[in-house]
Amino acid sequence: MPITLVNPLDETHRPPATAAPRLDSLAGKIIGLLDISKPGGNIFLDHLERLLKQRYGVAAVVRAMKPTFTKPAPDSVIAKFIDAKCDAVIEALAD
Amino acid sequence: MLDTGDQAPSLSLTRIDGEPFSFLTGPQTQSRLLVFFETDCPTCRLAIPYINRLSRELGEAGDILGISQDPEQPTRELIAEAPIEFAVALDRDLSVTKVYDPVAVPTLFLIGNDGRIIQTLSGFDKRALNEIASALAGKALVIAEPFDGAPDTKYGCVSRHLEGDVSGEIADAANPYAKRGARASRIELDDSVDPFDYCMQFGDPLPVIPPTVERVERMLDACPLPPDEVIALIPPNYGAATVEKIAANAVMAGCKPEIMRVLIPLVRAVCDERFNIHGVQATTHFAAPLVIVNGPIRRELGFASASNVFSNVARANSTLGRALQLILTNLGGARPGEIDMSTLGNAGKFSYCIAENEEENPWEPLHVEMGFKPEQSSVTLFAGESPHGVSEHSARDGTQILKAISRALATVWSYRVCAGVEAIVVLCPEHVKTLYREGFSKEAVREHLFLNTGIPLRHFEDGSGEGTQYIKLYNQVTIDGEPCYLKFQDASAIKIIVAGGTAGKFSAVIGSWAAGPRGSQMVTYPIAD
Image (cartoon, rainbow over all chains, first blue to last red; front, side, top):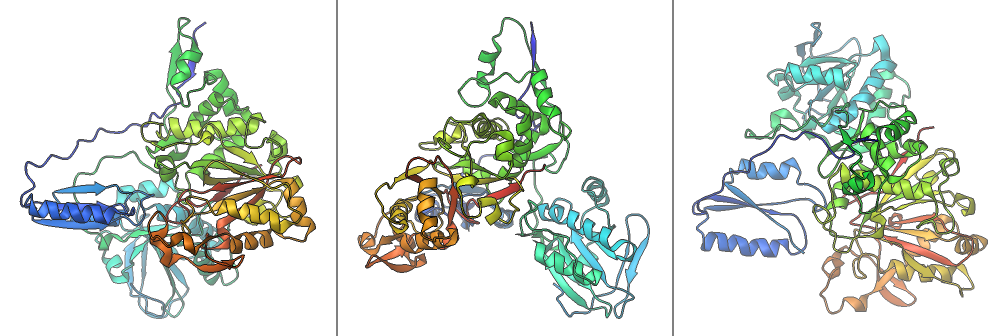
């Protein structure tokens, strides 16, 4: 006999989101670096900042840090990148 | 922001119901309360029911005005949806907001008869809400009870007039505050499909009971809530956990219908932001939510608290724990190997649910310690590793038992990490008997463990390795004549429960995930009768 199941999975409708356009070049761009506040993240990002400026001609680097790696970034952290009109943001995991 | 003692500037607004609301600077005929809010602020949503209660308590005598910083349509939607029972006006050009200058929303300004601001509250704070309510009522008035499932305090959102320019493309997300969700779709299976095989795609890799319409209906019949009511949105994907979806997962886990009574508050608890299930689900650490059941419900629904309490002993424990895990995976989306990339995982991700053995606990049980009455059943959640056993069969006194436990506690997270971690100590009945006989109270046990769990300073001499970078945070103590860092920052990091069978001197220690406000905090929720 056919049976009918109640779908137990998430069926929440989510409108599709498109990814931000990719940059053609890093030269002259403003790049955000997000430290998620794990140990060692600053070491990695310091190195990355040097590379971005010296090798790729990035105009400015904006740094922000999440208060804790265990939770999503609060609006105030994201706002820092938006206010600085970053062209792209790199988020760093560390440990 | 205007502060206590400042003259309240004159104000003239039209309420959303068309009535004017205004006053001039200077002496007033009565005290009044201004509540600045936004329609998309979770803290405002949290505060509204309490201000409704105040409005009801004050009745005609009350003079409360909500001032919305948002346009008419979302404000009207919030008024209908929350609902808001007090008068509301729109601050269309934020002119009133700019004068009062709240730093955050919600901000409450209590204005006295003399026209001066008596008290302000930015964000959510139960104690301050009760103070404001009492001042307005002219008598002691409690509108915000402790332990009602809401946090004691919560930060608000930035006031609209202080927001930066955040114009840009923002995804049209689903309304996170909708109280009703869509009904679950139906899946027709014809005779050629084995329903058990078909359902292997749902949740953990063990077979589940197929959630047929009939079985889910029986589950729903045992729950007084409508099937489309949204109990919570489950991180990290924030899928809507409607009563019906919860029931379907409960069927799959093998729950009896009466378990819905526990499962509904458990789903609310797991989504309490203090617990931070988002992080618990997404971490590479071992943590899984441990459910601890307290109170009369243990006997009513057959929860095991004695021998084998952490394992395969009772349907209630095993199925409640499994139902929670299925809900987290199926509705929250933290599938192993995808969002959940835990390095080693934890057997508790199949099911991790115990009850406290209150009958063998001579002290107050966990829920009473958390502020509940003994007869109030409750569920507690702790983001924990697997239990680590502590065998101590030879000790002649309680202090020796605690010494064995403290050595296990010292290894929680990693032995040289002495901050940001907590632990549950599960005392077995035989160990408890010895401790109680010697006059140890629960607090004395906790204090003794706190002061005698430490890591010798000599282990830090090489100066590298996890935990060594935080030594400025650590506190020194001498244990057995040896200088040590205290393992825990505070005695409250050690939670104590009694569980297990009456034979065997085996206690256990359960290490936490990242603990405290920067990680996960233990939460306890009441179970309604």
